[in-house]
Amino acid sequence: MKFYPALTYLLIPFAILLGLMNLLSLAFVFVNPSVLIVVFGLTCFTLYAFSSLRFLNQVVKGDQILTTKFKDWIKVNAIVSFVLCFIFFYDAIYALTANNVELAKMIKENVLQQPGIPKEYTLDFFLSMFNAIYVLFLIIGIIGIVHTTMTFRLLKRHYTITE
Image (cartoon, rainbow, N blue to C red; front, side):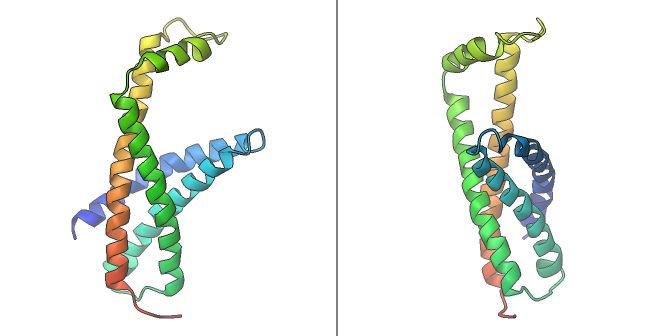
């Protein structure tokens, strides 16, 4: 039981980071509507993280009654968050174990050809930056998957029918 609060508090900085990324990506929704699915997933993850913190403090630690509305709110956001974290996990594993030849080719063709890129930003810099991002996604994915499964178990344990 002590593992769940630690994961919950670990999830909050990632939720803030992804929430800020989400706000920045809202501008791209009008240019490319397919970004809307990413915005939806990031929004659900952010809402889930803060809802699980409230669930932890009020229901698990505070012994308050869990309402049906709040349970449904957490479950819906947890399901979308689980899928998003699984995608993060899968993509990170694939990218970290794959050969960097295709990524290097894409960086050379698209990123390094942009005007105004300083010469200090080499191919190795971008490869290490992408690897760091994938490690971050791997961490978020693992924490998110474990946390959502623990949340579903706790929701079953602390659920009381109320209106």
